[in-house]
Image (tube, rainbow, N blue to C red; front, side, top):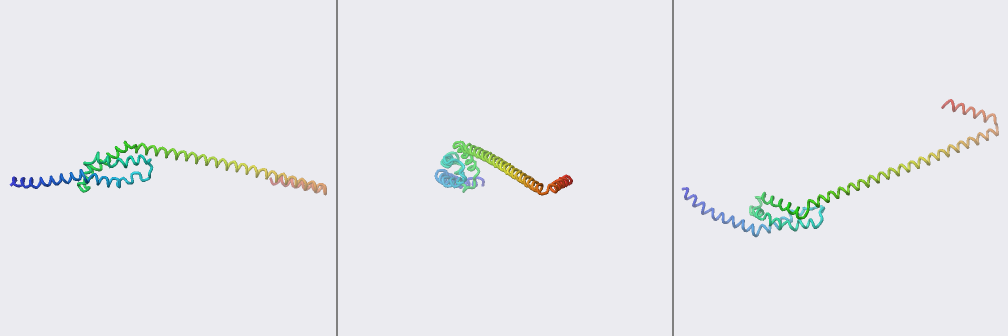
Length: 197
């Protein structure tokens, strides 16, 4: 009984293995490169969406992505495509290796780090310039306030002087008209001012 089961299994197993090998071979040699060439550019279309990287580095990555994937991960990609994209882990790992290789080859991480540092320097310079502008505005406001205070003090001094001259003229006029009343009014005002102060 076991003998007949083994014979039947071997009769069925060999064609199944041959069909699987043919399926995988067709994928490895013909279909996988075409699928990778069609899928990877779409998959990495958003690679540098904000276009922060220089164009030569972006082109270096995108131009070498498919050839590098087919060189490093063709077998894993063939398993991925032959299994109707169910066995993805080896292919994903190969893509990670390809990304790391292209990062080293094209200098993506170094360029991104440099761009971040340059942006930080620009931000610091803008902050310094803004601080300096605010300090200059504050100094200008202080200067204008001091000038306005000086103008108001001069105006007040002029008003006090004019008032003193007016009073002196009134006293002189009152003194020339009626000296006794003028002196009494002056003494009365002086006494009242001294009492209420």
